[in-house]
Length: 167
Image 1: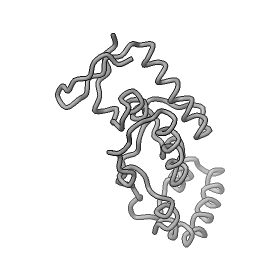
Image 2: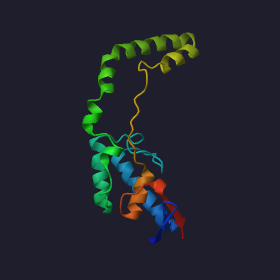
Image 3: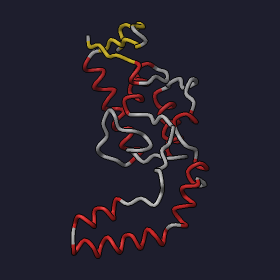
Image 4: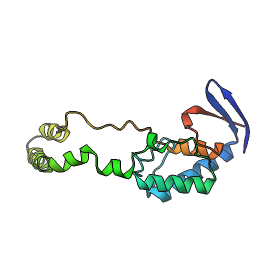
């Protein structure tokens, strides 16, 4: 499968046949489709944000993936990539969303009413955000490409740190 591994400019060179690369791609894609229920999964699809595998769901998926393909994930730091179930449910944003629920409902009604008068104003109302700044996670979400690369390498490896060379 892999004929040669070298370090070149901080990227690992992986020599692999097209057939083996395609087979690995399809295996990981089918695995993620089964675990997430999503049908359209691509190389850059993110485990949490695109496949909606949050908290315990992504933890269970990773555990199955590691076991199924016998991959060494000892260097993987879960906290750097995903939020735990507790972080997801007890965040300040969740509490604020519940408190601001009447405002969101009012915004929806006003947007619906203005939609009959003018799409321009309806669009502006829809885009209005009650929060001063949006919550952005500082986590590095894993992609399908990261999982494919890890499967081929046999250990945790980011896709961006590898260069595939076809035999």
